[in-house]
Length: 258
Image (cartoon, rainbow, N blue to C red; front, side):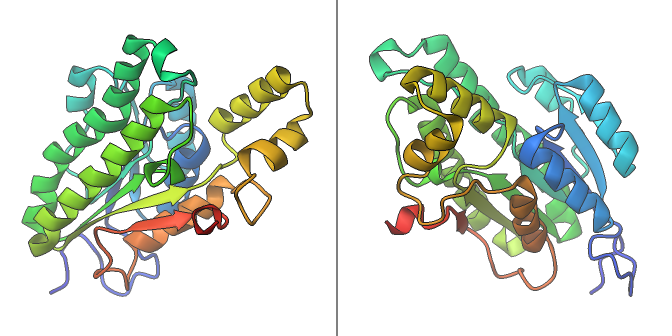
């Protein structure tokens, strides 16, 4: 039966749908917001960078929500009546476990695990009622593999993968899918900052950091573009993917095959 929120014969595959994207003001989140809007969805642009969120929302015809996802009350104040959730927001801190600041560890888990949980516990009931929904969690190759010095990020992404699978099992009977997109190193401000830091630390060029450090295990020696990740997200939200759930779509240039 045709969902009442999707007009028939509309060439835009997501016309009539509403999406919520966290960390949407830059990087992967920005690319996802743009792609979903171009496909016809109305997008809630969620980010703590207010000016950037407002600018993007104005450009794509969406709505900006300025929120710090480490604060539970701000997460719980986000809109719940949405058809698509893209949990993307994240942050990084690099240090050995015995030197890792506990408050930083807790912050990363609040933003990257607790916030997605809080978003989903509020948005899933509406999806269930309408009989359609798409949850796409932006994980990472680090949700499947580990690297030293990234205990908080790696454990948070592993937890996000697990949360995504639980949602897939619970939501299957309601026409709602839940999947992860798990890229390798993407050309985002987060990664570019890491490249600059490692170049200074190792006394080598940023190009050498990319080829010799970040992409050492990858068969493809180039960074992934945010738009490529957004296309994968859009595909999971579009027609023909109703039976893809509980999966992790790996975009790692062959890293996990090596």
